[in-house]
Image 1 (cartoon, chains in turn blue, purple):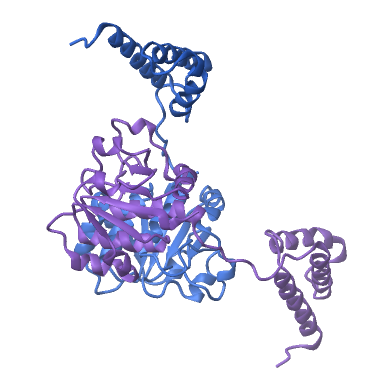
Image 2: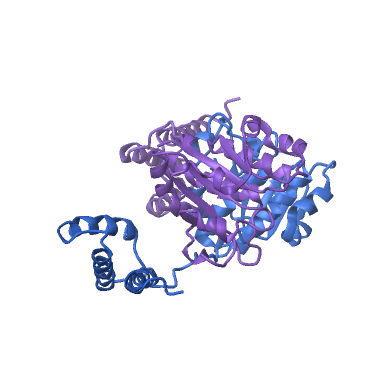
Length: 243
Length: 243
């Protein structure tokens, strides 16, 4: 399953800032090959370099094409994006939905994810050449995304399934019930000793303490900390301020 | 379940272009309330206006705060974002994972989604004031997202669950087996009549035709089109070019 088979294709982009931001978004999501069809001759490449940030290699490595069909000629699967209602759009799917198919095809050869002009998107003729049409979910009153933002979202959905990201893991394992109960028992004794609660109300008060301290799953570290706090409070209550 | 209870909080942003892009990203994802803590005094507000596009109302409506704690003072749930490893970060979750909890709290009162400085993110002190820490999945070699891109991704994950977007629907219902079989039967007759296949190989050839034409689910419109094509080809083969 190779992200390296995925080509981002920009059709007739206008602005250098967007081009650079697209490069950065691609690199953030583990993609490197950018194809640009007939970019605006007015494009400000200084803006592109500035916005590409640490993804200068993607910008410098972009390949230029004169027309859309040559940019996708070698691709075995082509996904087009469309923001507007219109011809073909009733078949559009959200970016998340197209990912399994796109990754499956990327095992077989190059696949293209295609984004249209900032002002006019892709033409009907270009959309007709795509295997699938993706529509990014957006708010009805302000539906139109910036080009680089659209690229980021689509690449992100691919990356979370096909990429190498591993979410942070809790280093401390979850506490088991026995250690949780030891902790609550120490708190129970403490709260009786310091006069926070009386014996006959202890069960009721401890329900409240349990609710606060064990609202989520507790790790062993969490339990250690809260046992330590209780023990130290008990010591301090008996012996006074240790300093 | 109200997106209107969600506040995007930017802590000490530097660049007007990012501020404007954040506004556009928020509006794309149905959010409107922006809070800005101590923005750079050098910020170029002309850039902000340009990049905000159709989200000028978000930009103009932003509220300014002198420090982080006042910006989140009224919030019942605070999500901080962090791109780097470090203190607290082992408890970070991906943006998708925090959405159910965030939307649940937004029923009860204002909730904050907080984004740090372009260069240094949020401080440990700021992260400590958050209920949850979110880490956006990104590629290990180029992990750092542009501020507005980070805001977009987080808002998008909220919007796809809590927003008002409805994906396009196929207008034509799926074809049932009976109509699919009628279509294949017409094609079978056609391909025999025009000599594309012989009777003894027909079953085998029709498997190939079925594979191509029914790889995905066919709608009634699809079946109508392909029946029409077959009928017209048969007519043309008998009567010659109709023009």
